[in-house]
Length: 396
Image (cartoon, helix red, strand yellow):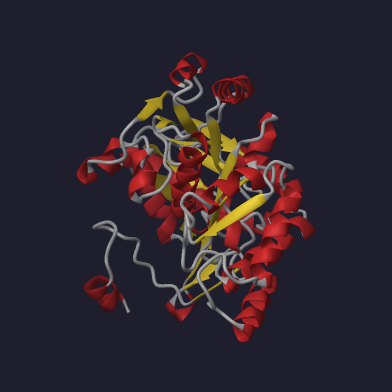
């Protein structure tokens, strides 16, 4: 398979991990000859409930046997879509009662930006330095990382970038601003957590100016930070919420959520103001509903902080300069990118998958499945500490 992978499959970097996967279960990935890896990044914050959870697998199988794609989104009444939308509304604040399903997080960003511009009649957008919101043109336009953007300009005009977690920067938000888009906790920047005061001030400024607040919870949603959604930590509610990654229980899903009244703006002038063929695919929605039920029924949010705190305590090491964490979302900061690369590579050799941040190369990420057991966590800690010990005594 590796020959086909390199010969016929488009590559995203010159140096993919290129490990071959044959099956996955829980926190484990298995390759040929039962080579196994403990997945400590959940496929980049996707598999919050682990791989191939039996309840999700059953939901996928049962829905696939009934019907798959039958019509472009929004025309037919389909139980998986309607049921999942209702369940999402039941666990969100009353003002977030209407979801538009997409296929991915970046598509959720695109839809949220369009909704904000349509609803306000404004075009100015405020985003944050070092942010990441996706790779399509609109999402890239509001991403605060020039390395990702320079080769694809021109991008969307009239976008301002301000410093994250700096209250004095909020004056950039005016009555000409359609929306402010922000990761509730910055992910690719290396798990940057805002203060309560900043979040409260941001919400107040948006309300005063009429700018819509879009909170991007594509990485932080569905229990990752010790709340079902990270904005719950700060006592505020966004006007629009973007979700994805863990949303589908392992299937491809995204969505943007707002009030029914606000979302109605996309249904007229023009009609079909936003449209998708495969968004809300019935099999993906069935998986997403089952996945959300697992999070709630197994009380994974309740145990998240305890598991995260234990892991953090075990990972202090002479190589570690700082650990930034919320729930089970970690950035482990080291001296430089070279040290990080050595640790990540050594972990992979020994069967543990960690990963780096493009916008914070001096840190590596951990985001294990929320289902990880203490015994599995101990295996993970052993591999990571051995890697750090090795790099400390055999620097390159």
